[in-house]
Length: 231
Image 1 (cartoon, one colour):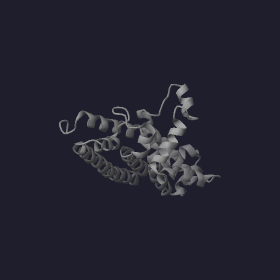
Image 2 (cartoon, rainbow, N blue to C red):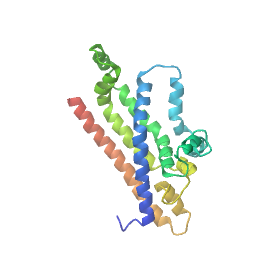
Image 3 (cartoon, helix red, strand yellow):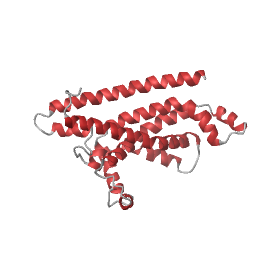
Image 4 (cartoon, rainbow, N blue to C red):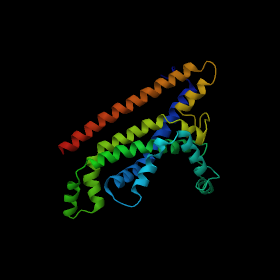
């Protein structure tokens, strides 16, 4: 594998793994919270929140990336404040992680929400009647039973982040060693004569990672579900 991939290709693979890992880990707590809110709470604006969460699935990725650039760029309303604190996202790998997290967030939330909705509310109510606080009910009843969906959502979000291209290249460009992930590297290799071989290698890596993530998601989900069911 070391000889098969060149240094530039390895950098793209390593950066993609780094971006996808941080995108998944940083968005997971928010994904669980929003999924729980959509599954269990009734509040004004619930459908608006649901629409905003799923908006990246509907909008062209380039539009999402441009909106991120307007919002989080150094001249944007949020990006300018972050820049004053020394945090710059545009044209940095951290911005690539933000773009990947935004694009993968709907898949994560949907998987977790369906898992939470599958938990029998009567079990939560029974725990509450015994004096448990809502937070304790969530931690001891809802969260363990929804764990297969949470794991599946996280792994699917990771796989989606690995393949993100449109929003990423619009928000952080395609800078070698800084923002050039696997999809951006494939695009760059296809723009130069003789780059098809390198592009194909990265395509194989991308397909392998995606398929591995799906298989791992199914396997872990079954193992956790069996353990929870036998508890």
